[in-house]
Every structure is written in C-alpha cells, then in structure tokens.
Image (cartoon, rainbow, N blue to C red; front, side):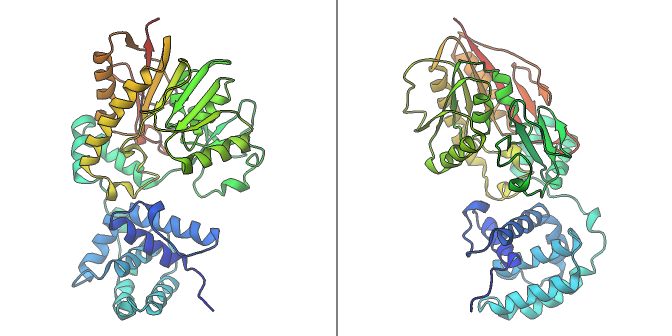
Length: 407
C-alpha cells in the first residue's frame, strides 16, 4: 500500500524546486489531500522566508552542501524547530525516516540526524537578520527609498501576509475582521471557505493595496468599463459591484476560470474575453479602463517569498516594454473625456512612476489626476504608491495612477 503524501517531504520538494528556478505553483507534487498540500505550502513559505537564517545555522555544520532534496529537507526541519517551535524529537525523527524511504536520499539520513540535532540546540535564531532582498533589487530600492525603508520592507516581508477581504456593498465582514483601508483583515492561516459569507458570495480575498486601483478609477452605474489583465478577478468584482457594465479581458483561459468561479459565487456580472490586449479591440470606446499591467510583482514578496529566487533583472526590461505597449493600446480604447487607471504590484519606479512620466510625454491630451486614497502616499508625477511597510501588519507594494483623456 503506498505511503500517504508527507507534507514535510512535499514542502522540501517545493523549496528545492524554487531554488532550481521554479515558482511554487509550477513545482509538481504527488497526489495529496487538501490539508496535506496546505500544510506543505505553509512550511515551504516559512522556509523560503527564513532561507538566509537556515543557511547561517546549517552552513557551519556541513562539510559540503548535500544534494538539493536533502538540503531542502534540512531547511524545512530547521524552520519547524526554530521558527515554528515544533518539538525537535518528532521533527528530526520524521525527517530522517522520510529520507530513509527515498532511494536517492537514504544515504544522507545519518548525516541529517546529526546535523538536525545540533540545529535544534542553536541559540539566537530570532536575533538573526531577516531574509534580505536579492542584491540587484536591494540596490535599486535602496537608491529610491533609502536604507531604512528597505530594511522596513524586508521586515514586512518576514512577517508574511494576512488575509484581506473586499466586501460587496451592504455585506458584513466576518467576526474579528479589522478595517485596513477600504478592506477588512483577518489573521493568516484562516480557512477561507469555512468563513461566514463565503458561500453566499458576500466578499472575496484581495490584498488591501490591490483594492485601491478600482477605488481610484471610481466607476459608476451604467458606465462602460474595461478591466485589462483582469484575472483572477478581484478588481473585476469591485468594478461590477458599482453597477458599471464591465468587460474583463485576460490572456490566460486558465486564470479566467478562477474569475468566472468568483463571479458565479458573488453573483456579480461581467463579460469575459480571453484575448491578448495588444491584438484585441473593444466594439466601441469605453468610459474607463483599469490596466493592471504584467510586472515583476516585487510588491508581493511578503506573500510570494519564492519571487526573489526566480525573478531576474533582465525580466524587468522586458516587462517595462510590454507595460508601455499595453498603456498606449489601452489609452486608445477610451472615449474622449475618458479615464484610465494604470497599476502594477511592483516596488520599482521603472514599472510605475517612470511609465506614467513617459506616457504623459507621449500623449499631450493626457493629464494625471491625483486623488487621495486610504493607504499609501502621492508621487511627484501625480500617481500613488504603497509599500509593504505602510501598515504595521504589512500591505502589498503597489503603484497606481489615474489618467484623464481630454474631451
């Protein structure tokens, strides 16, 4: 009879996959029940957020770094003991037994046993520095925001992300939720589908910063609104809840399935189009466009700690070219007097402030409309920015700007 999937081994598989260049959702895992997969995901996230700390602990104990599968297992076990406070005996025993069961790792079981016993006795874990950003990103952000701000951003990343909800008009937040900007916040680890109001579609999961661009667009009943790069649909649902006539477009049919499911659960309406915005044209100009452009996602590291291991500097250059092309295309969809909100979940000005400065230079009929929002701060060119350190429990880093086209 096959062994049931082990969350600890799956977590190690996820960590090893990320180190080899895969994003977490791309790493293949064996069949497992949802609870086991969820625990594996949580363990992998903690191990990635504490990668440098585990290196500090384990490095001096190893003559040579073992194969990736073994090293990842050591990292997962170390964070279980030192970060999550699990009993060392159980963690060490289960990790060693799991290594023994795999032919390619069984020879490392004795070494793992000895190393993890020493790791369990390590003192000063919480005094170790939090996970630093990769050097290329740290240097760029330090030149923009300063050393203190970058340290605060890294501290926010270490804390991870809470669960933020956007409510339908008239809905009530689940008990215990606290207001954050225009959203409501619950602690991380809550089972979303078990919360009151989930089945009734009274709310959806959306970071408090991610809820701001639709707020900035300020759509109204009956307006025609185009949501570009819309999946998984948080902003689409915000726009639909205003009574606007929304068309949601995305290149990925797989991601649009999630959007359709969310719309069905909440009872909100939008027309769905699977197409490339660079090739597609709406049947008629629209009142407003929300362009959530593809980006480096460097503002979401607190919830996606795999990103720093995978994202490279060359990615940003390709993305900024795509962002400019999408922005030019989207502006052409507007009626005279229409408005567009451009946003990215990036901390890099190349993908935010610089894009709007360039767009204003290319299009003399545009002006930026600065409007105050409940989180973040205005920027010099007329946009708005949030950073992960803008709230004690953290929020995603976002840039957004509202552009008005002359009538």
